[in-house]
Image (cartoon, rainbow, N blue to C red; front, top):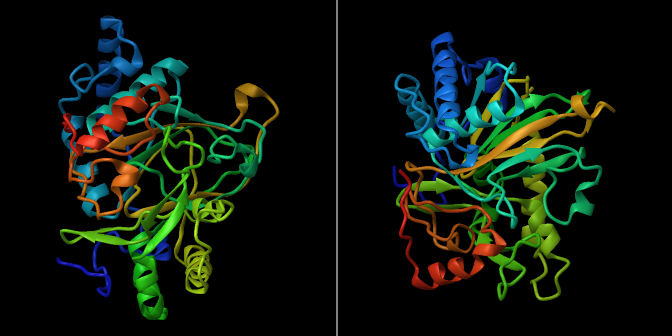
Length: 357
């Protein structure tokens, strides 16, 4: 369908949390055969002696599970934009668990860097700081994380250990928020399609500005995109070179906060769960949590940021964040500091030499 900014987005990814809570078919357990195939692929890689981050899809053969993963990828792109895989055994060593998770990710797409250090498989754990003190992202804290989207096509989180209490995952449909703004405050919809200045959170390359303009919602070739992280917009307001928020923008932020609370789905992570979200369609958040005092019991998630072959084309303006905005490109992520020169050359050319496969 050829949507535009005044169209109601009528698609499976425009959902209300209350509806999904009543019908949790988005929760998909691993089958016994799938777990056996994952274990066989793990043993095969161990015999090859490959380091985890060097393992490719071909090195991690999943002849029967791979087609199911492709259907999951399609669900993330054109379906609800989210899914929870349940039941990955935690009897493996930490490195074996990381390898299995990496292998699953390799069948979905290409891992991209999560920070300037080039981290491809990240640990989400409390480092004892509040969100404001990190100056970047809140994944290293136990504090509440507001609704946001990450700068990649798909984010995956594998729960290794739960917190003592709290740490509830919350997700909400970007398209449904678009629809509700259009229904309740149509006078604000144009504001959502105009540029908003976002902080780069300290991940700017040499010579790049510390804030960049990007609209909240956009369409490209009929595809909706709604990537939005209000905390980065509020952070950018501390920069004197950034325009002050207009009254209309302030009203959008207030309405966004209200709608996320009203429309979100609450999800409880169990050890062995893998949550997969499409960042163009879903915002995610987390409640504050209390951890165990023992280091080996503390909450731990493993995170992947993926560029996926079946991704949608992105609207103009997203190239500042994703580099290549064409469908199916290897895009997004935070280029490592060692790779800034290559990134600068790549952006100057305006092309990419590698495609997701």
